[in-house]
Figure 1 (cartoon, rainbow, N blue to C red):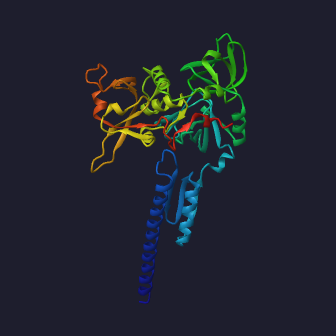
Figure 2 (cartoon, rainbow, N blue to C red):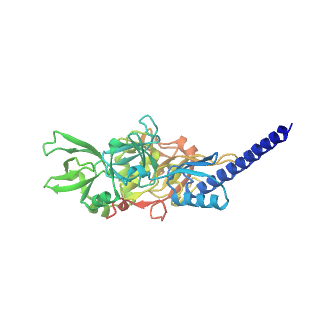
Figure 3 (tube, rainbow, N blue to C red):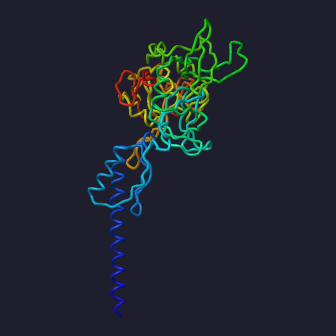
Length: 388
């Protein structure tokens, strides 16, 4: 008979423990979300993959200050937990936390596999921050802060010191929209293909050629007429109306590719990003990020307010039940026209009398933003790529 009270006591203790555990679970989960909203509101540019279950705090993050804040606050609340969180960059990288793209255009995917969605691309010579490795894939962050996965075959891992040495070497920028590195002047053997914006080391020059070295050590030549020394190229970059229109029109007809950022295939925001990059500015990757930069110019379809180089955003308007959803972007080129990548790079018009009239985009127009000559936290100079 004496066992019954003991059994009830045990049940009560189990129930109490369960209640305390559930309460801790709720408190910690809310705290994780609270700090996430502060330090990693956009998972495309920050990693905050934390979880708390059965007293174990696990996951990964590259937001170290935010994570340390979380730990401090949990300790101050006297919440017991086992810390199994992995801080990125991962210690297994052994200091090889930087990399350079070694192919003309590297595909960067949403997951570490070739069948995953193409998230973005990076050009040869682009410096990357390396966060972790999974099989033959590396999770990397591009200069515009975009985070995703790249195949090891497309990059060369480096330490900070090795990258600094690369920064100090002479370089050239390939300026034609497509071309090749050749083994020698005979141009019979290709070393690599190239696209506009690719960066290579300059080792020597002749009257007609640059002798170059790719980031992975391969060497060859490129025609002088198709490349420019880095310092000269940087000094000549400007986001003037004439330069922006000329760059955009040179890409006319390029095929649409979700995640693409080069002449090989390009999506809508990759197109606007590439136009600005080739004229000296690094802007955020996606349309839904680009819309947060610069100054608002128009929301009422008053085209007289627009200037060449303004970015037009399209999508779903906000209602009482849903937020505004930005899904497309193009660049204003004047005369009631804008250029954008939809199916292919094309010019569309808002003039109903024009053969280029685009009623579809007109009906989903949201707003226009001006980035040119407008200070913006996430718009950088291309010169920041090479930190001499």
